[in-house]
Image 1: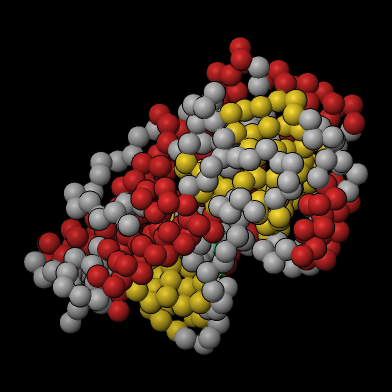
Image 2: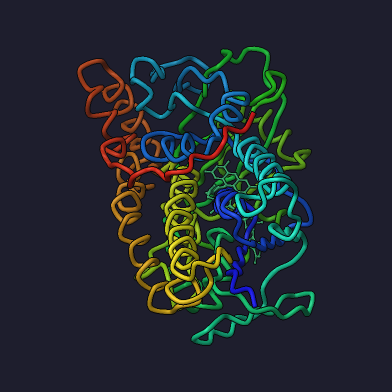
Length: 445
Ligand SMILES: Cc1cc2nc3c(=O)[nH]c(=O)nc-3n(C[C@H](O)[C@H](O)[C@H](O)COP(=O)(O)OP(=O)(O)OC[C@H]3O[C@@H](n4cnc5c(N)ncnc54)[C@H](O)[C@@H]3O)c2cc1C
């Protein structure tokens, strides 16, 4: 009887797809369930730097990423008339400022991952190098977990469709409001802290007078709004952050969410009116809390968390996607290592679910602990918010907002650049990744 391990990933976003890619390439049967009925498009430019970029290189994703790479030259701060009073160019800050050398929209990055995943499933993984092995990847859209029942030798997962299946490992990659985390670790309010505001993102037509390639941003009392380059020059991404008390009624109420955004920026001058008009028509309007996730441990028995579900430092850090790729990569290394070791020990080449493999609770616990230990220093640094807090970034009163503007000018001046670089990028580049896998994956063209 085969002891090939079975892995369930909940969430088909960046973290879930990046992990599935590695597992399928390694020939490990993987089920991935995504609550949305199709891959979710949308999202702003996200950046890859330091260890996350190295992980993307090792996963062979860079050719695909380069194809969609944005022409983003820097960030500028504008006043109510659109006059620039501060600039942070990518080059002056060596890609360590707000804009990194590699910027890609979240939706495009997800497409690069999905293309690679399809290709990996079609080529069948190392256990079947000659052809497609459909059984390696089971991708289900419009499906989600409703219950998890952990036993020592497996987890019984129950889905909304009524299906019930047993897995060796369940991975929660289902975002900041993770259902997997709730089912395995307890209620969300134990782990998620609202940092005092909300963020919205959506696509809009590019205003004619916008400087091409620049992310222009305006600070107003209690909010910021900006327009960022998109893959298509005819469109841009609008970004709005609002400082306000948490209001649970906003969840799942797009009309109330839009009303909040309107009241925060309507009098902001510059392109506020255009942004608000575009918001009414946007079909990719995304709105969520500016929230941080703090987990005492990333695993509980046979359930482990990655991405925002595990380590979200809020969109203010700009590190969510980087950490999603990195967490998926590090967990993938451990899971594949465990499966390989068990398969070798058994001399069976059956995929490694037996003794010392994913089926073995002691070996699995040790592998998950190693994963967490390796991710921890990256996770800690990824939570640093430029400026320290939302309150510092977005003061509420006019006078404090004017002072924030003076502060921006000062921080962007040449003598202050080294400090500004540190505030934006932290020291993430200094943190190494564990040794590379021996069998490097083929790049995705
Ligand atoms: C459409 C979209 C747009 C975004 N835009 C931005 C942006 O502009 N800027 C920014 O900083 N961050 C944005 N984010 C968040 C950003 O993607 C994450 O911070 C980061 O990429 C971490 O990746 P993740 O895979 O952990 O989470 P996500 O990329 O959020 O992926 C989580 C996935 O899990 C799915 N899911 C949720 N609940 C369940 C469930 N119960 N069962 C199964 N699946 C579930 C979601 O539909 C989603 O596809 C966006 C996320 C989404 C989904």
